[in-house]
Amino acid sequence: FGSSSGLEPDCRPCSPQSRSPTMALKAASMPLGGLSAAGTGARGGGALVQPLSRSLAGPLATPQRMWQRQQQQGTRSTWAAVGSVAAFCTAGSSSAAACKEKRPKRITVYYGDLPFWRAECVRMSLFIGGVAFEDKRDQKRDELKAEGKLAFGATPVMEVDGKMLSQTQAMAAFAGRLSGLYPGDDAWLAAKVDEAINGCTDITTTIGGTMRLPADDKVKAREALIAPEGRLTMHLGGLERLISENGHPGFVVGSSITVADLAIWRLVGWVSSGVIDGIPMDYVAKTFPQIEGLCEQVDAHPKVQEWKAKYEKFYGKK
Image 1 (cartoon, helix red, strand yellow):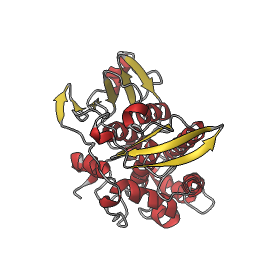
Image 2 (cartoon, rainbow, N blue to C red):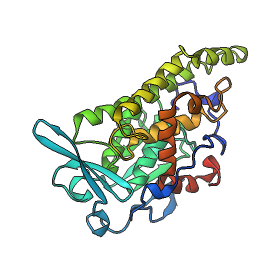
Image 3 (cartoon, one colour):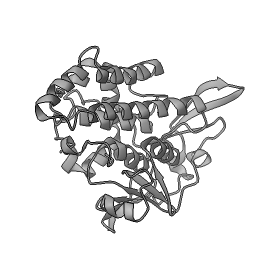
């Protein structure tokens, strides 16, 4: 949430019913492949998420599908989906090992034990990509600040081989590059992912502006936001347009999941959870079909289902 966002009062964990009942897309439509977390272990109050012991360069890395993305300045870019991990790479790279970023030795994500989208899209991107990280959920913000880890005074933050990284868009892009869920070789597609994530930030800021209003004024202010000409409707309409313009229903860019899709999915989970008085649980589902379709696609992803089962207290039973 961040120390200056003013969101804490209303940001209770979402109920198991926070997603729309239309989340019925079969997971079989998005093949799991061979990538999954090998196990977890407690260390320093956080969960150490382990990658597969088998190398991505091995048999599991054989692409299930590759197709041409576009012609740009004479260089062909291709989207390769490998099992449950998607990686943007240059033409001729036929394995995930050829296009994944060099991975740090140690990554720690610091945030509270909540599924808020700012941290969750980072955590889940690393998890889906099989990137080992320590999920530190119990360290107080004051402690992190005293240790010099909060450059902007807010969480979430990442520690990467002893160096700190903050700001949601920067962390999401970094995690996405490591996990193969960010189009690092295509400047335009990378910018569209960033655009979507920054759109999520705009939505959070707009809702956050109502959090400290007197109780009697909150509902009225939020009803104005969700009106046809309201500011929240405008922001969500921007995300709706990005998805529509992509040409592949259910994704911000390309035809496979990216960190931007994870961010939108989790943001909508919060907005539609019923914990924000004045915003109906079905507001997004009834008003923005492209966003709802994206949420269905993300929710059906096998690794997302695995993550939800791991944190059942937030997401409920399948």
